[in-house]
Image (cartoon, rainbow, N blue to C red; front, side, top):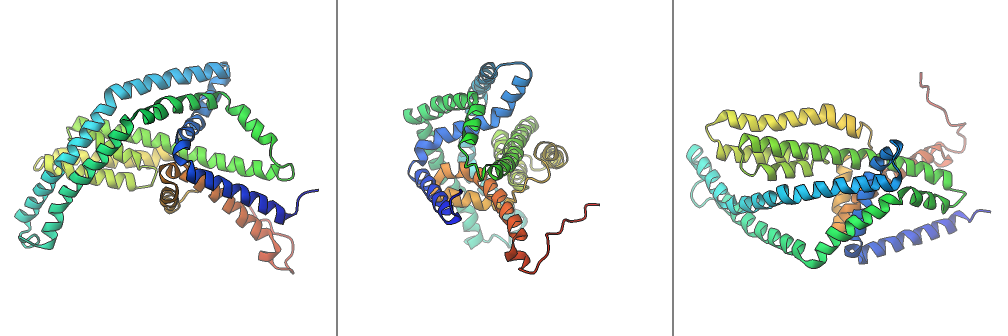
Length: 360
């Protein structure tokens, strides 16, 4: 005999509250484990495909680990130092860029930026603020990453956790399935499959899109000769998961820098604009339809809200779990709406059997 619904809600509510409290107090401690779990989840389909090719799970995990180490070494030696240097140079150059922008507006629109005007003072203060705050953020980030504790957490614990979870992923899923309450197991499995499908489409698919576009933007802008092209490509690729924001933010930054660097060379400026135009065409017509799909069910506003709320409540660890939790809440909400529309509360006491829509 199943527990009454009131008791079930009490137990599940208590479980959710305990989970939230643990996340609140142990967010920093859980960070490497959350990152390791995310990496294992991301790579599990690769391991499954290698298994279908005839490799054992242990050998598939070993192959993925070796490839990941090679990629990490290449990035550590070639990409990361350049990215850090360009970011620091961009922060240092910000005041000069704003002064050049002010001179440009003053020369061509003298009535807009009169000496001592509020607009002129605001523009001049932007560069100094970016230099001051940006330098502080960069120094703090570098100091944090350089600490022994963070090095151990990020470069030792995270890979170890990811490898062990990837190796035992299928067994862990089977063990969790065995612990599901028998009365609700079919429903939970159905919801879990939908959540996994949403996450697979969004996180795996959109992560791949971000990586491809970020690499394309960075390489293309550097080939054109744009200063700080690697930083612009990294920023544009990083926020591509929010539709149009990556292209707008990266495009505005790249074209703005191109105007200062190539002023008068309209071919180079047009090439920078064309790079982002081509990137958007490829993303909208090839990458996103093929890798993400058209019905992920995560609205951009819902994503921004979840990132803001979880980031405010739980810090950086909250931002990491925001998208999976948002996907889960979305699937559960759609399931609840479907059940509500089949209930007497929606249909009324005198309603007949639920009609099945004509699919002809």
